[in-house]
Amino acid sequence: MTTLISRIEPQTRAAFAALFRLSWPVIASRVGVMLMALMDTIIVGQHSSAQLGYLTLAQALHWVPALTSMGLLMGVQVKTSHFIGAGDLHRVGAVFQRGIVYALMLGIGFMALLLLGGTHFLGLVVKPDMVAGAHLPLILFACSIPVFLPGQVGSLFLEALGRTRDTLIATLIANALNVALLLLLVPGHVTLFGIHFEGAMGAATATLIARGLQSAGLLIHILRLKETKPFDLLGRQEKDHHGAIEQRHVGYATGAAYFIEVGAFAGMTMFAGHIGEIEVASWTIVLNYASVVFMVPMGLSAGCSVLVGKAFGAGDGAALARMGRVSFISAGAFMTAVVIFTALFAGTISRFYSHDPHLLPNVQMGLLLSCFFFIPDGLQVVAAQALRARKDILAPTIIHYVSYGAIMLPLGFVFSIVFGWGVAGLVWAVMAASLISGTFQTARFLWLDRRAARVMPA
Image 1 (spheres, helix red, strand yellow):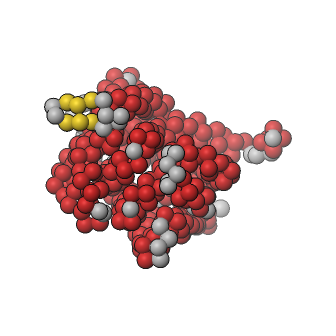
Image 2 (tube, one colour; image 1 turned 180 degrees about the vertical axis):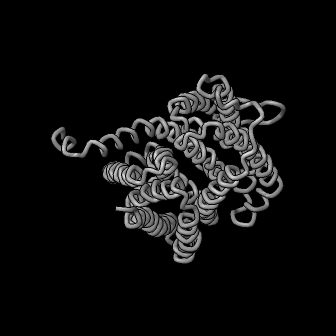
Image 3 (cartoon, one colour; image 1 turned 90 degrees about the vertical axis):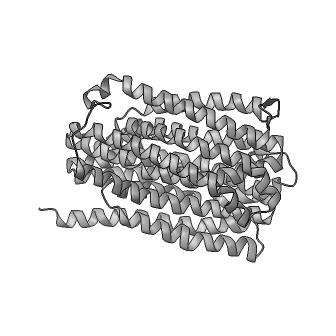
């Protein structure tokens, strides 16, 4: 192994090292974000399969605006990286301030939208008894969005500064608090103001409290850092019309891509809810497991975005191309390991989530089928973020819309409901979308590299 590593050219070894150094805390932090949902799923799933179904429906619907907003805020990370790479440090403070304002506007707006229309939308798709069970958890998840998004601005800003460990520590603390609250509230031991906290309701309450404290802690930490003092984050910033437009454009493209992907997956959950409680619980477990392992390439995409963004800002085409390839190799290698692990231990993983004999066959089958989409799914998220970091905004968004909106969602309906394949049909639809998105996103980045190399002067 040492001999093999020594044969890699020094610049490439340095690129791998920089990516790993920047990305591993981001990966752990992203896993921590999903760990909150994972622990919700495990603890509520062990408590009641029916409550797990209610929780899943409420979570799925709230994640559409929540993750869309995270995409809309991605300009904070990209533009901070660009300005640092270009040496325009006087423009960084305005990026942060705009991000906080955007986060509050989006959070309050989407909260109101869910409170006014969320339950009605569920009623159009899933069974009435499941709508009733998901109603109160959905209210709490909606209220958590305005406190969640400012913390995401803080995380993106710290990642662009290279302080990825800070977000990791905050995420670990929030997860520890969430688990403590889950163990207290999910079993149904607490009743306050006539409200009985149990199952899905208890999990939603735990999420709201943990998110609020995490966001507050991150923002206070950022304002107290010596490293951010030169940016005057609370002071009056110079007008930067061009920077504001570019920040919004990055956010629009990323938010649109996140929206179609998470919206399509929420639609798949609604299809499962249309079939029955066992199907929606089985799909929840499969999707949750896939989401947790997906956080590693998503963390790599954040590190890739920062490094590609800095190389782009500095005008270093060779470093930009090198960081893209190193990121693709890293994501592909990890997801290959996930495929092997999942194929060997699908039964054990299934029992980790639930001991319900009605769930286990569906879950195990879904996990085994998921092995076919893990690798392209990991590649597509890294490639898409690398494209945005080099200001190729439109192409990854179009690819996402075609793959997940025009292909996956209709196929999910046809396979799971029309053909009657259930959870297996949903997974087959994900396979098709991931393969298309992963292939075209990666090919687009490599094509841009070759085009740039051809126009460079000799």
